[in-house]
Image (tube, rainbow, N blue to C red; front, side, top):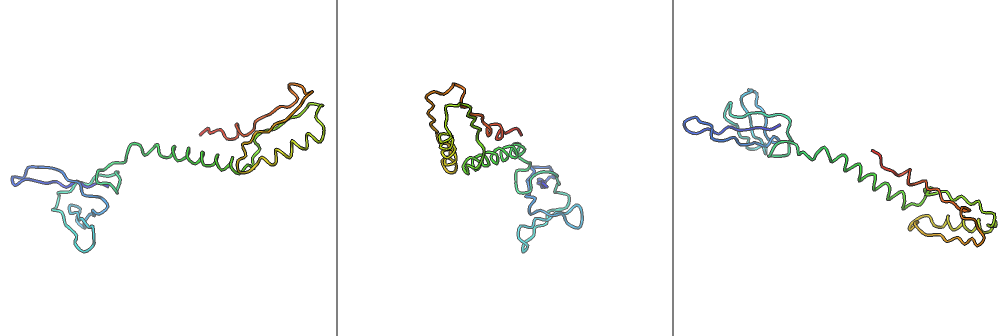
Length: 157
């Protein structure tokens, strides 16, 4: 709530309007009387019918009205939360980042097992590591990488 106090000249003309912070302004028993109570030891009574009560602004501001950027804060907070989640998601390394599809018959069971161990050891802190796989007689499409996490972490909100 906002409260505007009317200040009049000696002749009764309106000189100016002053704001009284809504955090400390209270309506009296009589609807035309308002009180300014910053601390409960020295309340100030405004003259009757000199305070205009305006509704809907911010109670913690002397310049009343909610800021225009307020509606954009939820979107910014959501984006920040999504970014923090993605960081934690990649740092823990327990996600399925991709599928490695090996169809080349030139690979032995030992090669495949070594590759599997190297992939397991690439998880955790610093998990964005490169893997080298040597395939001298392999086909061009013998090893395929199918990414999963790019689709899973897309932000569509």
